[in-house]
Image 1: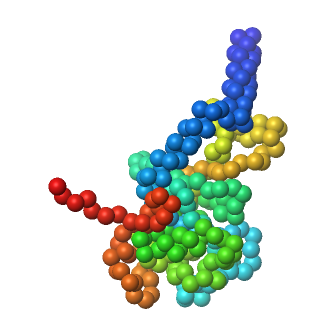
Image 2: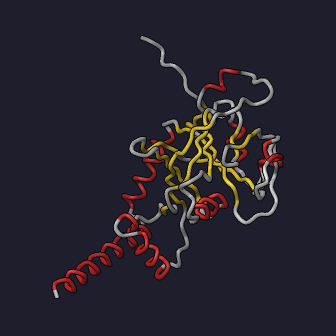
Image 3: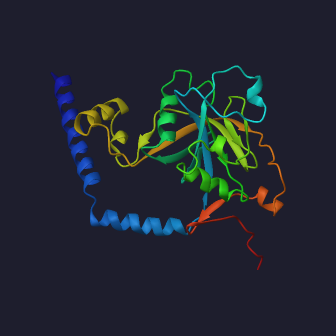
Length: 263
C-alpha cells in the first residue's frame, strides 16, 4: 500500500514538473528573452575556439580516398563528412577525458554521430575526430560551415587531410586533433526534461506528446581516446606563425590570440 502511494505521488510530481517545464520552454517569458539577448551580446565579446568535427556518414557505398593510406586498406569504403563547431569545450580530464559540443539539427553530422552511438562497439574505437583549427585555417572553418557548397568536402575541395588509425579524417595543419567516441546519444538543448527523469522516460514522453520532433540543437558529450599527430600542410604559409596559434571566433569574425603588453 505504501509503495503504491509513493509511486502515485512520484508520478503526480513528475507530471507537474513535466507540464511546468513544457510550458516554460514553449512560451518564453519576457525575462527569458532578455537573458538570451544579454547573454548573446556578452558571448560576442568573448573568444571561442573553432573546431571541425569529422566522421563518416553511415550506409554509403562510395567514398573519396586519401593520399595513399586507403590504397592498402581493404575495409568497406565510407563517405567522410565534416562540420564546423559553434561551441566546443573540454569538460573533464579525470577520471575520463571528456569534451562537449553542440550541433544544429537536423543535420547530417548529428544523424551520423547518433547512428554511431547506437552501435555496441562505440566505446572500443573512435568514430569521430575533433580538429582544433589553427589561426591559418579560417578558410577551413568557412568550408565546413557551408556544407551545401561542398557536399563531399574531402573529395571536392582542396582541404588537405590524412587518416587516423581508425580511418577518420585528420585535417593537416590543425593545432591539434582528438579521436573521440560519444558517450551516448545526444541531448536536446531546447528542453531540459531529461535532467529530471531517466532518458527512457523522457524519450517515451516526447514520442507520445510531441512526436520527437522540433528540436533546434543537441548536445554531444564525447570521450577522448587519443590525441592525434597532425601533419604539416603542403605548401608555404604567408605567415608561418599562424600555424602555432589557435583560431578564435570573436565579434562575428575570425581572429587569434595576442600577448598583453607589460605595464
